[in-house]
Length: 150
Image 1 (spheres, rainbow, N blue to C red):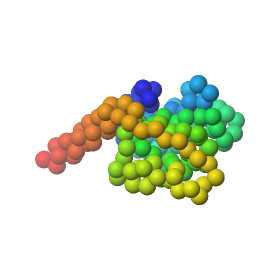
Image 2: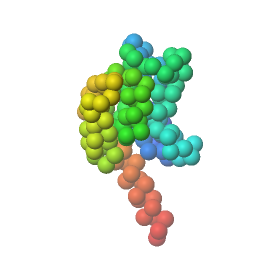
Image 3: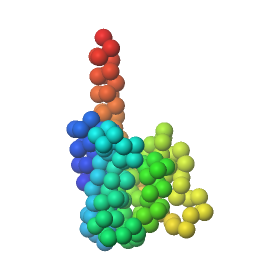
């Protein structure tokens, strides 16, 4: 999770929502990613999607069995769908997202029982650190908007 937090810090420095993700396959970090939606002007440029795309490229295929995704903030529905589709076995989440999370907060796509792939979830890993960077980012954003409106 510490590596995912480093990715989140990269996003923060770029003015992106500070979410980071890494894919570990067979005990090796095979991909890293952080949010790039603003930089790329792409609604799908989430940390999870970017790291999954890189991992698939490295694996030479779309199946990421025997893989764990570490992500600082609970994945949204799009990212949860990508996790299911890529056959990632386990997701380790730093902090939950009560406004948009799809792994237990708003909905849990992984426990619907209708999908042919099952994903194990672990939550609360380095939760304070993962939550703090998000809070700091949005506080800075709000403060900046307030100062610009004066």
